[in-house]
Structures are given as structure tokens and as C-alpha cells.
Image 1 (cartoon, rainbow, N blue to C red):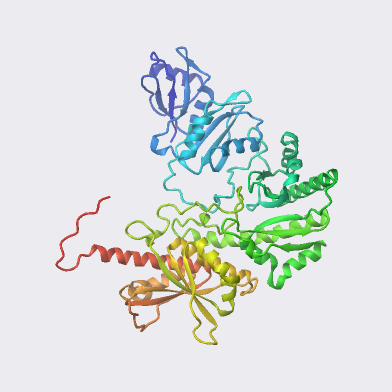
Image 2: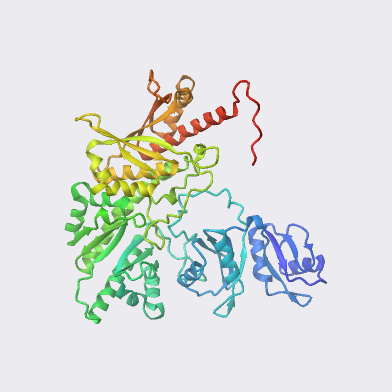
Length: 582
């Protein structure tokens, strides 16, 4: 959609006047001009033509003594979260622009638009409509280095239908195309790694890292082709502050080494005598694989780099901070080598998890994987935002008829030896897990002295099931109940009404076979089961996490369909139901 709104139009202006102006500036248009009192509309054939009209006419061309204002024409229903900001000073640093935009809310993406103008243009997407509206009100017409910013909505036709995508994960500071150190300069080297390097530095060194008027941090950013966020306002009064570095692995390592050198110099200048170790933050999901079976991976890194590495205990994790601190002691050179090896392992773990997620997530309709806190966050704040919730329809066919997700009960079977790890010291881990997932999690008593497995009873809606089960699978991997190259595979049981079991199996086993092919999980409805007191039978699902999850979701969809059909079928002799109000 490339419809333009032309404002500040003189009462004398005619369609012919606009025809002449567009012809003079060689701007194509694909329809007639609709001229109203004080404003006009016109369609352009493509985005390029619309952008050219905005760039060359808006605020620059006069008609009957009035300077025209030209911007995208956006119906109110499409004015959601997307803005275009034009006339940005060409040499403005990204850091300045980012911090300016962040004043009005969470920026999900900020992409540079290629135009023929001397000034820069960016498309910005905020997390919420009211944030975009506030930014629009505050920034439009505001002055920056003698340039008046121009802000307009851009049509967000996909706003309602867009789901989360694997490549645009919330919390990963999506930036659109690679960016140079300032919006007006050419493209910066391609950022190869999705996972940022997160460091903790003593608060007293933050000033030296930033430098006078930000000169030092700008220099590091430029030299290492990285984007560096120093989260100064986080954890007010804390002795340490997190720093997030987005770049290629090499860029991250170079920036890290430079920051360590600055801290070392500042320590000498201020006669600070304590050792300054390198502290790297890593999401708990990856730490088990970094440590390796019996600590082998970590020991090898220590031996190869001549460093001493310790990792903060699991007990330090909280709902809002799923990161562990990896403390590396040694010379700057040794610490730098260790950082490369540690981050290499973490990136490998992340990539293997993302590959598994990408494979399956597109088959779980709308489930907002990014809001679940299962993957690390590169955004300020030391972990995922817990306010994110799945979009409407995230639960596929498993929501109840009132629109609220219906609670489900899943029995997950874990190795009996793993019970202690799941419960944690004085029940801390299971309490935390239950709180994080929003589910009730209980471990059933052992069925005899020699039981090899124990049943974990999880009760909660689909999102809670996903979070709880994912953490349990992850915990078993971390605690080395499965080998380093072995996929964690568990069995889950869900109960279905006996009359619906046939629907799960399908004619001649067709549905269950399709289900197994689609999900890569083994799905079995044991024959000759005696229904329990609630007239329910068990469906057994076994496989790795995503396979198991997907099979559960698909079965719940079948059950929701059956329930819907049951609801619409009035009992014999019953009066017809009244139509439901929308």
C-alpha cells in the first residue's frame, strides 16, 4: 500500500496543480489526485515512488504560498506500532538514536531505509501501539542538530496476522539490515552471530569504559564493528553492571579484550589493587553443555588457556535472571582466549537449540516461543521480559470456548535418580519452576522400591505445559542424566475421554500414523484399556522435547474439535440453543 496524504494544502489548489508538481519532480502516481479542503490523497505505484514524493516534496515544495506536507496515508486501524522517522542527521550515532527511541518504549526493530536523500530514514517498530503514538507525538517536528525530525505512521497491514518468527526474536535487539556506526553511513560488516556477549563489569569502571562524552565507547564500537549497550540504570546501587555486545564472534572478543584493557589501566590509575576477573553471563540453558559430562569441557578450556574458571551456583538463578556468571581468572590474554572458547561452546548450544526449535515451532500454530524465557535475551535487563504473553490464538485448538486457555494435565516420566535434581535443595527448584511456568508440578510417590522412573504431574494451560516440560527436559540434560550427544527423550501420558480415543487413532490407525510422521514422536493408544472412573484412557507420547510438545498440541486440537462437536449437538428432545452473542 503506497497511498500518500498531502497536507497544508491551499484552498486554491487543484488537481492540475498536483499533476504539474509530480510531473516536474518526475514522481509517478497510479491514480487521480483526490483534493479536499486543506488536504489531498494520491496513490503511488510502489514504495520507491512514495518515498521519493515524501523526500523531495514534504516541507520543501510550495503551492499557492503554502509548504506541502507529504506522508504515508495510514487508516486508523493500521496505525499500530510502526513509524517512519525521516530527516535524521546523517552522522548521528546509532547509540544516540537508540537511546532517544527507547525513551518512549520497547523498540522491537529499527531498520535503515535506503533513500537518495542526504539525511537518514529509519523504520521503527515499537512493542505496543501507545508507545508508537507517544514517540510520534514527541518526536515529530523535534530538532536534532538543526534538523527537524519528521515522523509518520507506516501501514502495518500485517500487524494482526504476524506471528513470531525464528529470525526476528523479541529480546534479541532485532535491527533489520546490518547497520553502520551511524544511519547515514554505508552498511556495516554483517553480524554473523545472533547471540550477544554479555559481561559484568565493576560499577566504578563504567565511566572509564564510556569515556568523556562517550568518546571511548564510540571508539570501541567503531574499531570492533559492534553495538555495545551498557546497562547503567539496571540494578541501581549494584556493585556490577551488565554490558551487552552485539557483533560477529571476532568483534565481540575484540570489544571484550579492549574493555578488559581499559579496566586494567583504570585500576592502575586509581590504585585499585584487587584482581579484576572477566565475568561472562550465559543463559542457564547452555551452561550444562559448557561444563560437559563430569566437567570435561570446562576443564579442557582451563587447561588450554591457563585460566581458572568458576560458575555461579544454580541457587542464584531467579525467575527474572536466568543467567549464570562465568568468572575467568588469568592474564588479559588468557582470559580473552577463554572467552573465545566459552562463547564458542555457548553459540554451538544455542544454534543446535534454535535448529530444533525452527524445525518444530512453525508446526505449533502461533505459540509464542520467544515470550517463554527459554532462550537468552540480548536486550537490556538480564533476562526475558516476563510480561510477554502469547498472542491471541496462540493455543491452537486447545483453548476453551470462553477464549481462556484450558488447563491440561500431563504425566511426564523422568529417571528416578533425577528426582532430587528436579526438586532441588529444600524444594527450591520445583517451587521456582512451578512459579516460572505458572503450573502446578508434583512428583508422584514411587511405585515400588526398584522403580526406575517417577511420574511428574504437571497441571496448567498449554503455555505453562510448554515452559514446565522444557525446563524439565533441559534440567535432565544439564545434570548429565543423558550423554552430551544424546537427545533427551521422555515419555508423557495424557488422558483422553474414552469416546475420543478412536478419533486420536483414526480409521485404520491413519490419524495416529500421520501424527507420528508429522511430529517424530511415538504415539500409542494402548488397546484394551479399561477406562478409569472418569471414563478416560491414556495416550502415551515419547520423544525429544519438541516432538513430544507438538504431539501433545495436535492431540489437544483433536480433543478440542471433539468437544466443540459435542457442544453443538443438542441432546435428544432438547430445545435448540440460542445463538451466542459475539
